[in-house]
Length: 137
Image 1 (tube, rainbow, N blue to C red):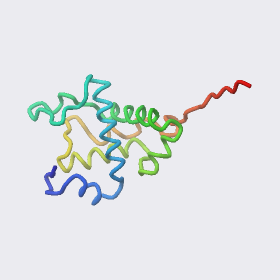
Image 2: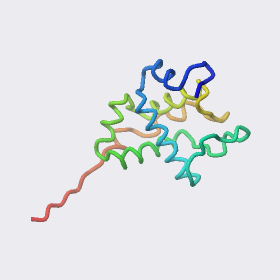
Image 3: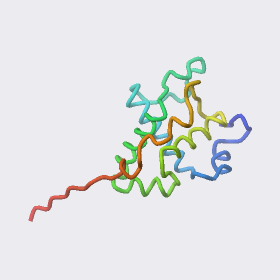
Image 4: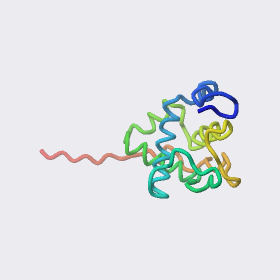
């Protein structure tokens, strides 16, 4: 897929350099997770161009979905995995989304803003997963 700039998504991501390709693959998975949780069913490959908000999720909904999916996949290592990809706060997800929006790989509604991703939750609190282990001896 080629964006408005004539570059592929991979070229745009690599050219930006802030986040690796793996982070964007996880963003895609988190978006599918959010759509499934909120609307039921997976995100269609191509949305109806006449209804871009049909399966829309908000910035905060995407952030919480990312948190839940990260904990499901990596548990106590979630924050470490995300940090390896330069994701340290919810605004990083907004930066990733808007990199794709600005290059026509994702859509937004008129009400959406990168600021919708700012301070949705604190990573230290969201990924503070206590382990209650009980050893039977």
